[in-house]
Amino acid sequence: MPLEFLKRKSSAEGSVTAVPQATSSAALPEEIVAQEYQLKLYYAGKSSEGVRMRTGPNAMAELPSMLAGLAQSEIEVVEPLPIEFSQATPTIVRPSESMQWLNAHHTQSPITRHALVVLESIDAVDLAFDTLACSLLDGETDTSGYPEYNAVVGGVASHWDEATGDMIVRAVVGWGGRGVRGDTDRIGARLLAGLLTNVLANQNSLGLTAVERPVPAAGRGGLVCAHCGFASAHERAFYCPKCGMRLLRG
Ligand SMILES: [Zn+2]
Image (tube, rainbow, N blue to C red):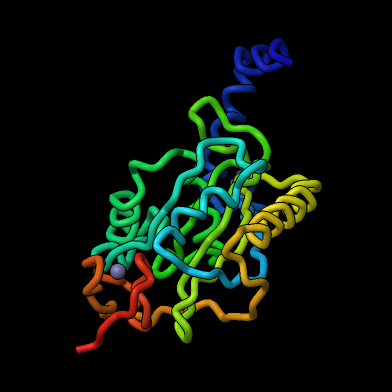
């Protein structure tokens, strides 16, 4: 093939035919040749029913123990975000939202940040009212410490029931990224069951409860807690998302 090409070029006839070929390329071809580019991101997760907990001064401190036997890395606790981070979203094209998100989470481990990206993107966790205790639960991390797409992350999330002020804890797992594997869903379901078993086995557990997760109203944010000073980003909160004490309305 290269020889053929050289032969045509060197001959007088070949150089003549090359000219009309070049000019004809300016016209729109009948069929456009397109290079295709694509990235498929896949995030998925599962959340269990809530478990009502007998609350005490150490209620929050109990959360990491509910990952016992399942955590494959250090357990980190992510607390509800205060009002100055009320717009925080892991969406890079929205600079204000992503800056808030990075400012809120840059000190956390790669595993926790990955877990937050997955669980917040699929709306399994909302840091306006949730506290999340999480770790790697299955699979590997890359050389930078970030979970692979088929690694399962998660743990337990807690919030305060707006009607009673009780702490409600649910198991939550997530996974995803640039790819999907068939058995990850099954592994996620098994881990969710293991976590829920741990939550129910906790000494403060009062059993499964049907409680809707609070829906944070968009806009101004909530009140400053008179007990711990936390300024909630959750406008409808009746109980401080951080300490669980009754918020006093002025
Ligand atoms: Zn408080």
